[in-house]
Image 1 (cartoon, helix red, strand yellow):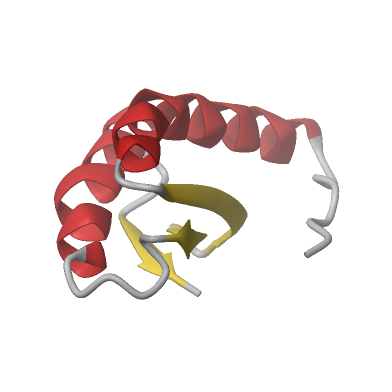
Image 2 (cartoon, one colour):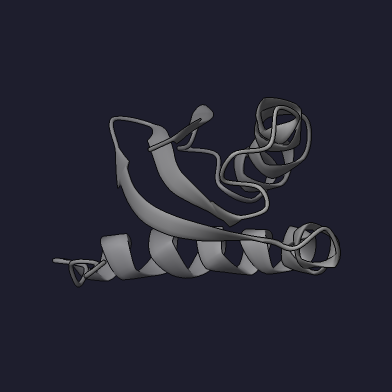
Length: 85
């Protein structure tokens, strides 16, 4: 899946902060056989894709809202939620 390059410096900064936040939870997700990719951010929402074991796991919503959303929103004031694509 191709991810579009950021259009502005602000977009690049936001993308970097989101990726850094995701890097904090990726080891835990990987330990369960999963991965999370940042796809885009629009209107205060960061969109991610859950892959591997997390892609079809019934607990992925808890991982998304309880862990991923928490670290991303803490790192990025302009992000108010994280949704799965």
